[in-house]
Image 1 (cartoon, one colour):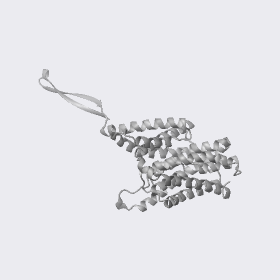
Image 2: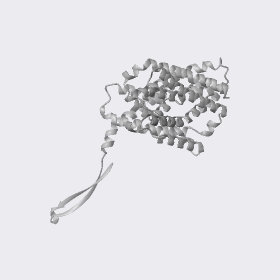
Image 3: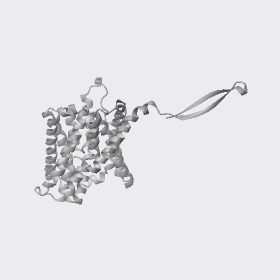
Image 4: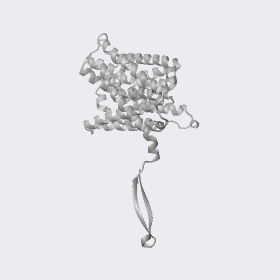
Length: 355
């Protein structure tokens, strides 16, 4: 922040007349100084996460970021001065990243899948989300964790969890658990699903639809479809993006439910429709108009990953491993059952109403 100071001086040679000199100096506001340590740590965490992704492509930068954050947050090396910047980054970067995520979706591409496949996508997402919540209740897991796992497995992994965490009543450990489950079971699906294409009698296009409708992360979808060739990958990515389109209405619907669950006397209630959800929809509309050049879209895709990785690193730093371990076995069982659910429902839906 730049500030101007006017300094007065008295000249003895002129009989005590007063002159003025205007001096300008650059200072940093107290708020900025408070945030800098945490923001520097976030930048370092994002850089390391990208390196992990380059070395292990199936592990997305988002997954690496939250797991790295958990490690850093539980080591005695995290200074207290970093906390304000981490908190700021978690909230601000998260919403900005979700808004820009909309630029990865073009409605005409999604519509090209056909009405039957789109209906199968909607059915798969709805059944997976609601079924995962029900399974979490049976396993006596926290409601917040079940909601986040249901969102991540039904929509698009860590990005969906990041979008949903701001409107549900959850613990920091629930976010880390959800992302960890996406990593574990998305990787399992990525490896196992190609081996099922032959026994299930799937064509390349049909297999692409199944992979796009059932595997969790976009990177995992690409890896799962690659063994069957470029045609399968193309269909798989578009099918995956059709799930991402449902992120905004799902977050908005859950926000409405959360408002009803929390009386106004309990403090601030979730917004009717979060502003970042409206921003997400606006970016989808912009992308669908086809007015942005490819270079801009590539740059915003990278920026989106950077923003979400920074937010998830901040979330991970707030996680305590002790609390995470206490729900471990039941959370793993939820991840397994939810993965079987999304894969089974996707296959059945494509057989019955897809095509």
